[in-house]
Image 1 (cartoon, one colour):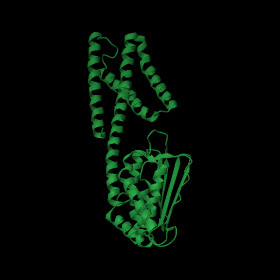
Image 2 (cartoon, helix red, strand yellow; image 1 turned 90 degrees about the vertical axis):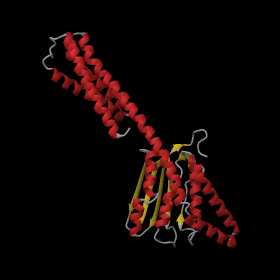
Image 3 (cartoon, one colour; image 1 turned 180 degrees about the horizontal axis):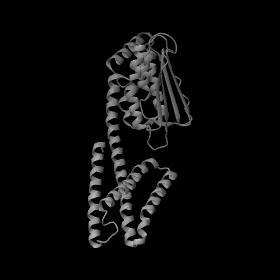
Image 4 (cartoon, one colour; image 1 turned 120 degrees about the vertical axis):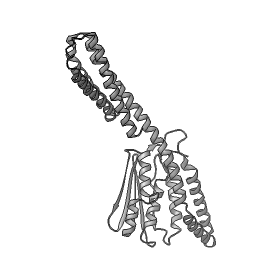
Length: 337
């Protein structure tokens, strides 16, 4: 639900609450004209509104604050109980009916706040799912346009064509890698998450194709970690970062120009990549044109909320990106490929 729509729902809810409270109070006064508050009707309605707002929004926002933490839930429940007791205590001297008439409306407000919060959370989750579906489609198209652009394919195929006359075995291996990457990008990435081992394998193949475009095979360094246990990861998180570094590297000659580091401690994966660059390219890299850093960050926001950090640093001559990500265990039947 959009904020404007949510605001209107809350606004009209409280108008209805005040109107209902007013009518019920008038009905009560018709039955008991000599009630102590009969001469202060406006003050009573105002006080009831303040109390209603307190119980409702303390519950509404308190549930989000507490989350699934048991201690916070207990604290919230005790706070509401103390407030109920505090506001209901003066009515004890007027009998059970008066006590119940003070307790029941506030308890109903607490339950209504829970319903509002639950409905809002369901709507938010559904919206995020729809947004993720759209983003997945846009991401797939963006990869096909940028990573598999005619320029990329033309360079790769030209290099393979050259290898056919120089090293047929290497040319065959390169064609196989290109075919695997095309298949991976078009088909395998349709699943939500894949095996980390598969992602690293496709990343390594992609780097091998990039190496065909430079003279020194050690131009790009890539040393994937040895996996004692596999994990699940969203596909194609590394490729745009590598493509970005390769594209903005200020030189096409040398050793370890585009440097990558991948480490895994427990389920925490750290990916670092750096490249030398000029000032204009630093601006382009940091703003994340095209798919770039912005789209990677947006995907991470939706798939790994609160479970990642993505930092880009400029030292003046080097641009470095560091991604830290909490991975999921690969323990689900049928997960991965």
